Every structure is written in C-alpha cells, then in structure tokens.
Length: 219
Image (cartoon, rainbow, N blue to C red; front, side):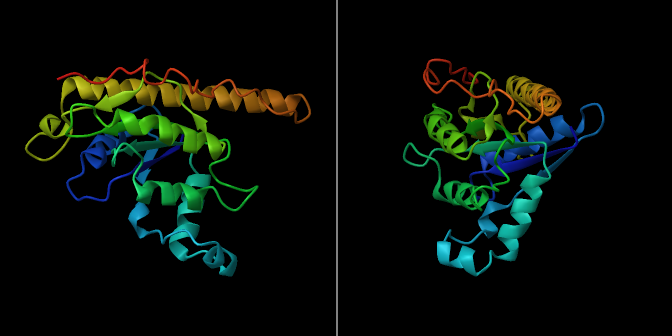
C-alpha cells in the first residue's frame, strides 16, 4: 500500500464528509510503511461531455485520471442529496469511467462511507454509489456501512472529526481497505501465474441487503 486517493462528494467548505476524509487521511498516514493519502478535488472537473472528451480531455480530467490510476485504493465519502449521490460526484465518476476499456477505476479498490448532519448519516446514498462503482468495474470494499449521523456534532473546535466512536469506525474501514488491496494483489499474482486468467471477483459487494447491514455510528 503506497497511495490512497480521497474523494469527497461535497464541495462545501465546512463539509462533514471532507472532515471525515481528513480523519481518514490521518489514519492512513499513521499506518506502517507510511502510505500517502491525497485528495482529488472533483469540483475542478467540467461537466462530462462526449464531444469535449473526443476533442481532448481537460488538464483537470487528465490529472484526475492519472491520480486514480496511480492509486492503490480510493476512499469516497458522500452526502445524500434528495436521497441520491450528488451530481458533482456522479460527474467525477463519469469522467473516471472513461475512456472505454481503459478506465482508471477498473479493478481499483474503493471504500465507501457517508456523513450528514441528519439522523440517517446519508446512508440512503450509499447503495446507489456502490452501484455506480460496480458499473465502473471498481472493486468495492466489503465492510459494514459506515454512516456518520449528526456529523456536525462530532467535530471539535478546529472542525476536525475527533469523536472516538467515529474514528474507530473509520479505522475499521481503512483496515478493510488495506486488506482488500492485499487480497486483490495476491489474486493478480495467482492469475499471472496461471497465464493471465482473470482473478475471481471475490471482493465484489453483495448488492442486496446493504440497508440491513447498516452499522451507523450512533449518537
């Protein structure tokens, strides 16, 4: 594990999802081997347009693709906008799912969490986000969903996520992400030894039952 890319689905300066990812960054960078955690600012990406893509993707899009392609894993934190993934996050995934047949998301390990000031913790946006990532052929980390409810109350005076229960949940998700990367690496080595046969998709999440497996962080 050398690099984790962090993607917040909220552009707001005081975003609780961005605060959660800053906590993830601290957890990642304190791990053995000092892996690097970097943020991908998706607000800089233009609206997806096939004509623009054919004419040559923008520098921001090219940089985002390179950043994801060079990552071992992604951690995505999303709010819920009217029960769905924010348009800015969907737009970023649309760009990253291209070009067809050479998407940097293909085979990339991705962990998902959500945070909200609401009592639901934006859990209702997670299944749709996982479906999007599955469509992009990413490998979604299987882990009890982390949905941080009343997240604005979990911040310290500096605006950082310091609640011990939240940090424990995020640490568990990071550990599961590291494990998924290691397992996938072993699968790829085994597949290479078997003359390139594809590795089994053992890390794919079970789409059904995501809501019933919810383990939201309690107040």
